[in-house]
Image (cartoon, rainbow, N blue to C red):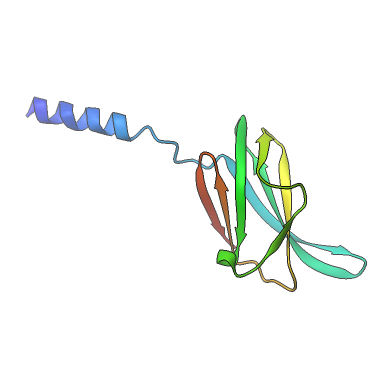
Length: 106
């Protein structure tokens, strides 16, 4: 019994150490420029460094313009903005990073 518990505990320790917390913060808001209102997605690093490889809006059904280019290495507190094309209603944003993929549903 003790041997089984020890093996179970060791397994949980080894496999339970993965980074399951996002290292980015994803937000969006509507901005207006010259009377035109558009959704803007902001991706901010909340770890020491993270590389943003791709930002997907509405499962790829809505294009976006990256304001600062990808692939982008962000340091803690730095961010990139993505402007959604057209009159998009942003429902989901997926961000692919060097440390995993993260998804937010609005």
